[in-house]
Amino acid sequence: YQRRVRGLQRRMISLTLFTVCFLACSTALRCEWTPPAGASLMRGVRYCEVLLSNITAGNSKLIADVYNTIGFNLCPASYWDNLTTEYIKAETGYSWVYLNGPRYWLMDYMGPTNSSGAGSLIPANMTFGGINMRLAGRVTKEGSEFKGDSYYTLTQVTRRTNWIWAPGKLAYFLTNQYGDRFIMQTFSQIVNKNLQSADLLTLRDKLKSLPAGWNYFAENLTAPISVVSGSLGYGIVIQDEFTNSYSALDPLTVLGRSMTSSTESLCHSVSMFSCSAAFSVTLVFALLM
Image (tube, rainbow, N blue to C red; front, side, top):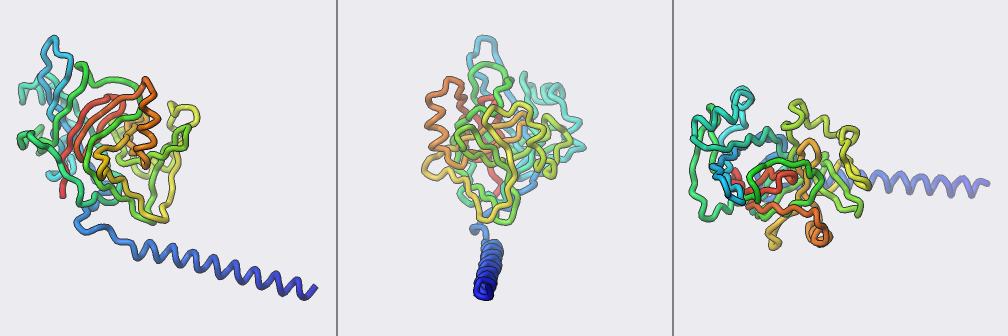
């Protein structure tokens, strides 16, 4: 009996030491981890966009310029809330205007590989109702409307990004019926103007249109997660019904499956974006470095 007791005590001591070592190592990893040089701190940063176009009858495509507050301001609510599409049309002469925002970044850092990739786009700045913005890119879409309800639809995004979620921080995920994981990169106040980051913990109960076999959950990260386009030059993005945006952690696998789906929607962009999968548009965004 005494031998059994001593053996049990030794096992308990071993288990305790293992637990202490594991916690110490996990804490050390979080303490020792540092973001790459040149990375920009982004979690919680607010931004907005204005899209402008002159639609002409008979055109099969909508081409719009995208103006973004990144690098200028945090899209002050006192100005944004009073901004209307009709006001911008009158001020700019454009016949079509779309207001996209406000949105908030959820990655902790944007790494130094991000770039606007604007190519031949002519740099320009504009002011809308007192909000300074820069020309961030150009949108091209089949048809003449930015409307739809195709949430949870795969979107291919051409971009050069290095987005980093730090260990010890909360991250929010969607998984599909195949187990593919999508990490939330921005949350939106377009549908729910009162949505806050704290609400994301219980968002699962509010996702009434979540497809069968899909799940939403929050996770406290024990290791960093990076969404890097690298040599691929693209990412795979989806949106939920609140227009929160998520990036696939394994875009090659996800895209491979989507090639056989007739419901696939493609959205091409360069660098930063807040592209809606429901809109299936082409976005190009600049990055504040």
